[in-house]
Image 1 (tube, rainbow, N blue to C red):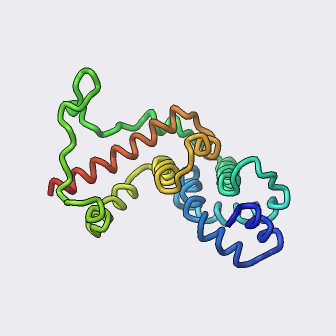
Image 2: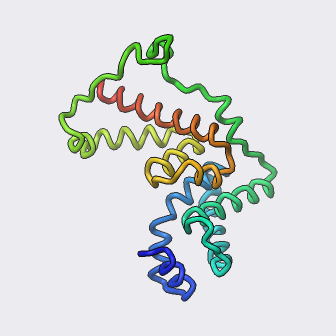
Image 3: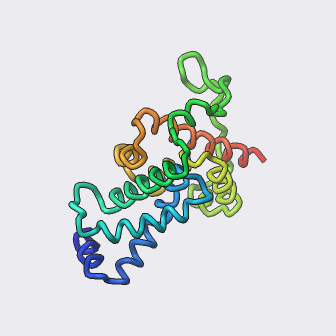
Length: 198
């Protein structure tokens, strides 16, 4: 449904429209909240964000997509909550302290693969995607990622958001977000490669 119609339905108090928006956006909201405040109070932050969204919806000007606007509210609420709890969040610090985990011997001096990735031993992409064991492996790999990497991976690769939107929501630089996304993808790739080697 076109976004303008959805917004009009929301403003008219259409419960089905609210249900649709919650179904579509809740998991992304939770990823953003977890990236900022951790898992302990992420649910509370999301609930508070929904209240803020409902109150602020009449003022929505459409400068961004509704989803981006909602995720920005989650981000702002999460950061306010952190300030109240006297904690500090810095995506840059988390990225700087982390080791990527990709063995350096995999690359030659010119940056190309010295040891290329092994071929997946499932015949077709459809078989690959329907493998319950592989899906479980990927889910476990994603669950082990730091919250900020999970969020960026989810927003970019699962929700297909642009890097520019993600940077605005999380208030991090594009270069930092690309490093975090690369690290997340690399860890998932290594988990798949390990799974395929078994």
